Length: 186
Figure 1 (tube, rainbow, N blue to C red):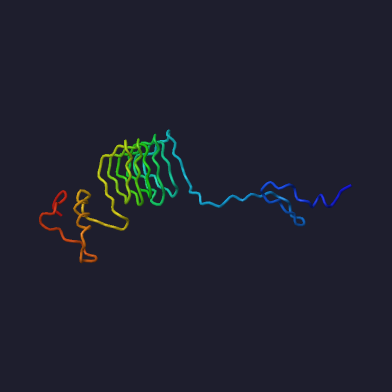
Figure 2: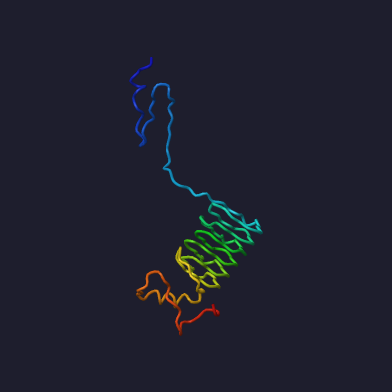
C-alpha cells in the first residue's frame, strides 16, 4: 500500500535544492550557469595560407600565414607561435608570439611575447616587448585621439616639451631654432 507521507517527504539533502512539483508541470533538475559574456573567437590553422585582405568583428588567432592586410579594429588579434604574417595589421589589441613583417597598429596595446618577432613600426598607446623577443622598427605610443604631424623620431623632444608647464591651452608650441628636425623640411 502506498503511503502519502513518504511521497511528500523530501529526499536527503545533497547541498542543492530539491526540485518542486506544481500540478501538471514536469519535474526537472535545472542548473543555471552564471551568465557570462563570451567573445566570439576564430582560429586560422597553421596549414592555412591567406593572401589578400582579412577583416572581421571577432577575436582571431592566426597560426598560419597571411599576406596583405589584417583589420580587426574592435577585436583582439593573436599571432600564434607558428603564425607568419606579411601584412599591415590593425586591431584593438595585438599579441604576437610568431613572426610579423609589416606595420602594426593597435588602439589599446601591442604585446610581443618572448618568441615573437616584428620587423616594422608599432603604433599603440601601450607596448610590451618581452625579454627574448625580436623587434626592428619605430614605436609611436600616442594616446587615442591625439594627432601629430611630427615623425616618430621626434617623440623624445616633444615629450620633454610637453612635460614643462605651458600657458597656452590648445595651440601647439612652434618649432624654434635649435629644435631637432626630423627627415627634412616641411
